[in-house]
Image 1 (cartoon, rainbow, N blue to C red):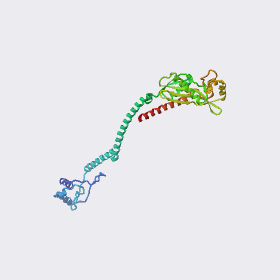
Image 2: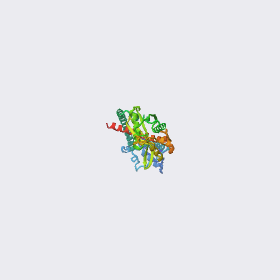
Image 3: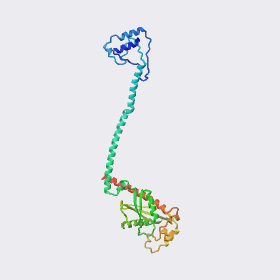
Image 4: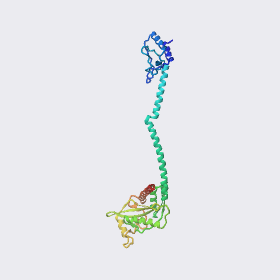
Length: 353
């Protein structure tokens, strides 16, 4: 029988704990070898079976479990199975600990999770407060100004226009311009007169002519609810000394929101010969001579009966429709922006209230 195994068995029966000298970090089998004679082994075996004092039986730590100096240490040969079992248990413990560290992230992971949970709760609470406040503010706004309901609830993508001219090219140009800003545009022609000469001279006269046409429609009650009126007035102005330019004034009026906007189209320089012709065709006693001339540019450039003719194409590289489409698009963009600003202002006032 192997003496080493007998010693190991005897020690275990006496209550001693077997200590593996193998380092846990390496997990490799280490066999202690020492040139020990059979006599020494026998002495060790007899020592193992000798009675132990209570103090010796209470030794539990590896340092305390070393064999006393006076007695030779038994040679304990550990089998491969024993080492593999020990290495597996140590390796398993270390593996579980690392997984916990990765999942929890230590103290910083705990703090991160706590902060994230707190932020999520705060965000949800804030979102609920904002939604309730928004609903209350919208209710106040629609009560004060029912016309703002369409804008706030995304129904501002359609618009109905009333245009103060019977010129089909002007009507189509304005409609095209507004369609580049609004999804749906309905344009209706309602010719209107003004108290300004047919060809206003100067910016002031041109704006007044367009505004007068709008005012006449409003007074005549020819505008339905929520319709927007576009006054159109062609004019000339001496922008540079001795040089005359033709422009078209577009005056927007929204009775429901009380918004009024004016814009001018791209200017086109008019040859002096046509200006002279228009001045000669206007009687000296013409009652509206203070505001302009009695003949339109269409009549002067294209001939009699061409009051609304496309003279633009003749003296420039752009047609009337192209020029007015750009102007109408700009006017539509400004109008939509004013609606947005007005809605935001009402919301701020409602929140203050």
